[in-house]
Length: 584
Image (cartoon, rainbow, N blue to C red; front, side, top):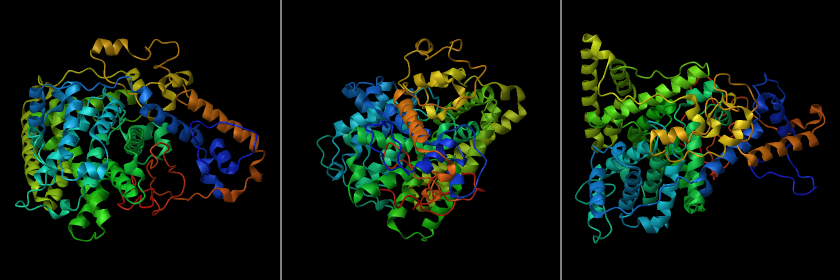
């Protein structure tokens, strides 16, 4: 099938060879390709799948372009004392990024990568100067939506710092404090300290890929979940067939940024490029908690010696580390852990507000009081955090201390539940709990456009939204209010009465591309029965989609790809270590 690009246009009158049948079927909305193999399925809504691919390309370009990065923070020189303070804090498990100003947040990110660069041979293996890496990290920070109370760049830095702590504890990377002695030579692992065999197989490039995955794993996160997008039938969820849609969007944005900022050679080298890209993408995709059970089974097989392929071993190890880092909040000191619990509850409350506005089923249960907060933490630790850390510690002994902290926090939350059950009045109030007001629905207009349902906005508003990138947060709440895209009383925006509408491109480029697609369809197709039915070759049961391996246009999850059929009985796609072995 032909690829649809954002700059699609008719440059001359020569006829080009295209899969007119497949294009017509996609535009005609007859099962989005299901019927082209000789069967007919019920039509699905008003989506235009070919247009969605074009829109995905266009919005990815828009959100990662240097021109849209108007809110990027200029790198500010730190005083020597401030730098020493940040270095010391980054070596501590008590690290609290939410207490740092924006300029120190990006400085901490750069410092962590700078310490990684002190490893022997790292800069030579990567061929990425620190200044080029700095540009990439600044642009990446801009892609994160800072209005999110949880899934923002603070969380990304928190995950990166946790990943670094795990690796340093295992004698794999140097401490950040190595930067306090700039005259010291390159760092080598202490030969007197045994290195864990599972982690020792990671090369310099593997470690760099893991660090990039950690800081970029939630790029462009809208502040709501895959389940919300599935229930709302958002364009992004349709592009990825309801399978790890957010995580695949993170991959698309991350790879595009890498190419824009001079890191593309790491992805494109003939031999090592596919391996680097595969490790990076599969590490990010593992952060989808809906594939957590599949990961646990695969990692259990690795620990039992049933996985002998070195490349798959590396993938599983990096997945285990980033998953532990991603949900490390219950394993931090209790004061730190409580902050993150409240931040996530606030984000879920915002999502619940949007779901009520759109008359969607509630897919999250935000903690509205101290008792529900404590109960949710007990459930999450017992269900996810403790089993994951315990299993990882069984393979990487240095992780045991973090598993112990997790168990200690669990006991604290259980005791709090018992106390609040006795004192009902205290269960309804918490003076320490943040009183941050919930977001109004119009506040979500700054998210990546394809993550919103098409009937959330009127058609003419979509051209405005596409031009809006997830910029840096305003300095004050009043500035945020004044800088809103459009007020609830706007003539072109009606929150109280959302109207059904066909999704159109988010900017003029996307609209032009969609118009060209439709023109090509109408000019080339006369009768459906004249289509060559062999020009479309779908599978009745689709396998899990590939991520956007080219960094711009995601591969269609509705097109056949290698791998076993996907069973509709699963709530999420199987997490297969070799899932993208053919990606290049």
